[in-house]
Amino acid sequence: MFYLSKLLGSPVRDVENKSAGTLHDLVVSTRQAYPVVTAVSVKRRGKVVYASWETVTSFEESGTLLHTPASELAERELAPGELHLSATFLDKQLVDTEGRKVIRVNDIQLVRNGPVVQVAAVDVSSNAILRRVGLAKVGDRLTKSRQRPKPHLIDWKDVDIEQTDEAAVRLAVPQTKLELLHPADIADLVHELSPEERAAVFDALEDELAADTFEELHPSYQASLLLDLPDEKASEILNEMSPDDAADLLADLPDDRRQRFIAMMEKDDAEDMRELLSYPEHSAGGIMTTDYVWARLDDTAERAIERLREQEDGAETVYYIYVTDRSDHLRGVFSLRDLLMTPPDRKVRDFMTENPVSVRTDATEEEITNVIAKYNLLALPVVDEEDVLHGIITIDDAIDLVLPLAWKKRLPRIFH
Image (tube, rainbow, N blue to C red; front, side):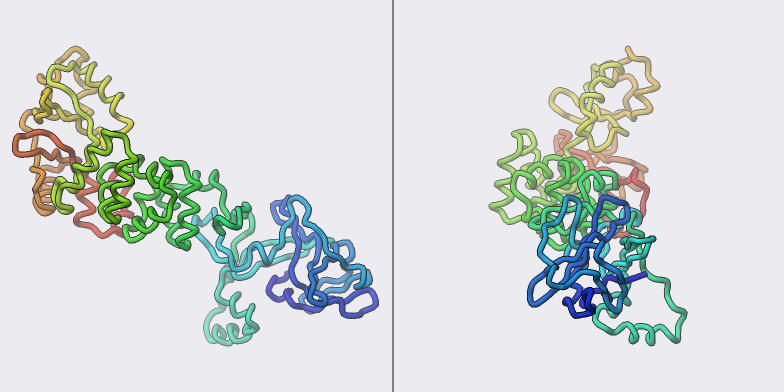
C-alpha cells in the first residue's frame, strides 16, 4: 500500500544506480475501474520527463529504481484515457457518489496488484494533510492517547472522476450522474463549492432540475449565484421556478438585473411576476403563488378533470381545485378526492364547497399561519377586497414562515 503524497519528491535512480531525478507525478490509465499506473513522471534538471511502467524495477515510498539509463528518459504525450494523478486530483473537489457529498482529495491510496500498481481510494482525513507536510508523526502522537480513528478512505469506485474542462469546474461529476441525485442532494453538494464551481454546475444542469435544485439552496446563496450565471441560463431557471420563489429571488436582485430578467419572460409570466413583486414581501400577496388549478361553476366533473390535466404541469398543488366565475371571483373549492368520486356529468356548482376560507392580499404572516393551522389546510386562497382570486399559499410556504430551513428539510417531500 502506498500514499501518493509520500511518493511525490522521492528519489528516482537509473539502471546504473545514479540519480535520474525525483518523482514528480504518476501517469495512470482510467480505462479500468481502479486506474493503473502506466508511467512515472520524473523531474530532472528542471524538466519533466517520463519512464514507462515497463522500465520500473522497484517502486517504493523510499524511491524508484529503473532499468534504463537516465539519459533515455524523454518527454511524452499522454495517451487517450491517461492523466496525471497528482495534478488532476490532489487538492481537487470530487463527488463521492455513494455518500452524495463533495470531498476534497487530501491524498490518494495506491496498492500493488501483481505486477501493476493501481489507485485504490481517496483519503479525505486530516491526517492526510499532516502526512503531506511531513508531520505524520505529529498526527500519530495527537491520537496516541485516544483510540486510533478509522482512516477516512473512500473507495475509488464510489468517486466520480469524470474529466471536466479545466476552465469550467473542478467538481468532476458529469451531468448524467448529477441527474440521478435528488435536487436537495445536489444543493448540499453545491453548498460546498466555490462561486465559480456553483455557477458551472448549474450551467450544466437541465433547466427543470436546475430550478428544483435552486429552490433547495440556502437563500443566502441564491441571489449571488443567479448573478454569476449567464443571463439566458438564469432566465430559464427563473421560468422553471414556482412564481412565488422566483419573485422572492428577484426581489433580492439589483433593480436593473431584476427588470432585465422580467423583460426576458413571456408576457403572462412577466405580468404575474410584476404583480407578486408589487406586494409587501411578508404579506399574503408577497408569499402566494399564482400557479393554482381552477374550474368554472358550470363545468361538469368530466370537464374539470380535463382542465386539471391541462393545468397540472404548471400547478403548485392539485389537492384543491378552486372554482371561479368568469370575472375570476372565488366562488368555491373542491378536493381532488371529491372530483374523482363524482359522476362525470355532475356540475361543479353542485358538489363544490361554497364560501371557502381565504385571506386578503394584505394579510400578515401571523394571520396566514393561524388560518392554515385552524382549518387544517394544505393550501389557502388569496383574494382582494372584491373576492377576486389572485393566488394561493401552499403548506410548504406556510412552513417556511414558522420553521427554520434546517427543520423544513427534515420534513417529508410532500411538504416541499
